[in-house]
Length: 239
Image (tube, rainbow, N blue to C red; front, side):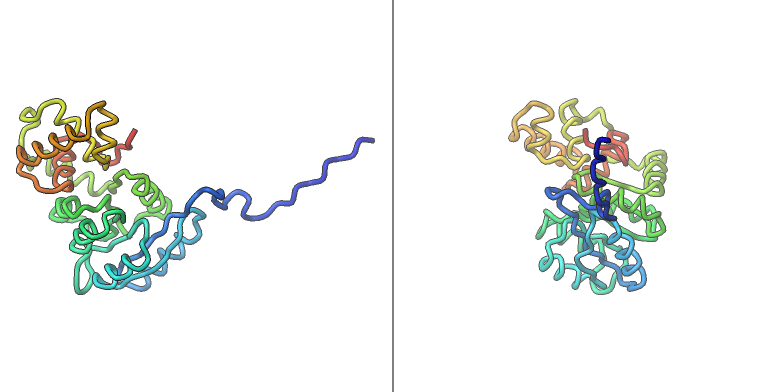
């Protein structure tokens, strides 16, 4: 009788461990409630591609640990002692722009939506979202895309229906709209240039013209305008 091939040993990590060339996403948790931090950490550390590298309980500690630990993503609460999460996000955008921020909060007030976008955060997700959605949000932001919860989408829609838009789309040229869409999707000038088959300097010129025409001084502001005017969807993926 022919010999049977020996059975391969199976381990619990065969299907869950990341491949050797796959880098785990390093996450810093910033929230002043230790129970929430520990709960989120326990959930994320069970995911093979995520690693919680530290926790912070206030704005100052978040800035310090961001510099010390160099995480890929910070899950940032809005309401924290000393310096609030949105102010910290704006500081990180200037000092450590490579770190992506995902706002994690219970607040979904309409007044926070423009501030979240203007701060430079890459997205928002409510604290009561299921773990699967939180993981998806982190993975989406890590890929360079934006992610916003359904509540924020509804608020943005209401603002648009109420006429809270910066100006009329017809004031922008087709190429300016293309560049604006790329900016809202989180693409770099080089990536936008490659996608539109134009020079990087040309993209920079269009970006400057957009800020001048719309009287907007930040990428977050341009993103808010694009969302409010329906140029991009809140969960549209970069293709």
